Image (cartoon, rainbow, N blue to C red):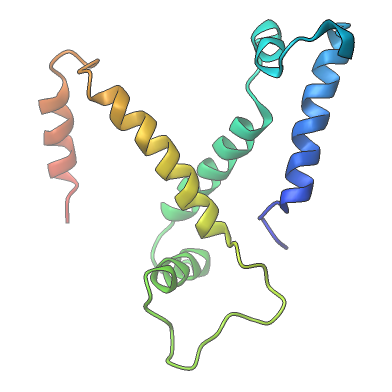
Length: 142
């Protein structure tokens, strides 16, 4: 079973999501209303945001599993392979497998969200709670 969404299917999902929102709101092509305005009117998230949120949620569940669980071991092996540490010297990705893996998508999602989060955190929106967060992070540090 593949968790990765093929780009063709992903663009189809985005198109259908927007098309049905326009249909519900009775917006036609000649109204010249942007997709951002349609999302604002419906109050829904973009389909890409929903997929990203679900993908990161699944990653969080897998990453929090115990080290002896096979799924977590596979995740650790994949992460090491992304960093250049292969399970064995002659190991290669199976022929016919997609070049973009689930780990690639997670990294892309987290890089984008990390950039947004770091710009948001840079404005000190927590009002002095940063020391409390640092103390909690130090408690769980290895």
